[in-house]
Length: 216
View: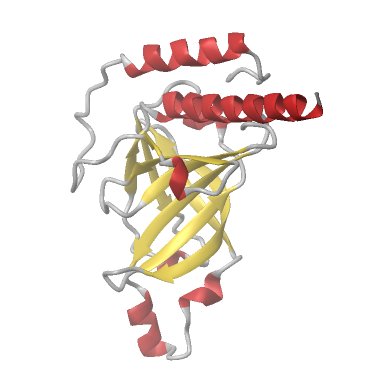
């Protein structure tokens, strides 16, 4: 289990050490193939995010613009509240519009969706989320942002190499997606998680120090 958090220097030192250690692990990629090279976890640039939000992401093996992202928030630096965001592309809406000209991708916003998720080829698990937003991409693709309200423990305990994700075949929204499985490298997930936590703790400590200074 990941440690509970407190905003002190000992935790920061622990996080820094743990991140360096886990980044040093060498993991093979025999059962993974990708259509592009940028498929490793990274910390999103802070200036691209509102203050108080922390995001780390990894791109899917199929499309550069598809991501699996972890979000933490100032309120507890991820101790209890942490979301997963999944960005998926699809070109199915054009086919659907041939039968239903009034269909709009935005009609699917706020609807629940279930995913099949498995790590390292193990048995798949059902993960529930909801479609938070939809848009059109530069390639005229449908872009779906799916939010999962918590991080399932099986994604990081034990440590995973790869995660495979797809919309479940029996999900009512399945027809709006292409049916392809997406793969994500997961060896960098926990180190990035710790780095986001460290960034959050530093910011909160800075805010608390400034507040104390202002009261003096």
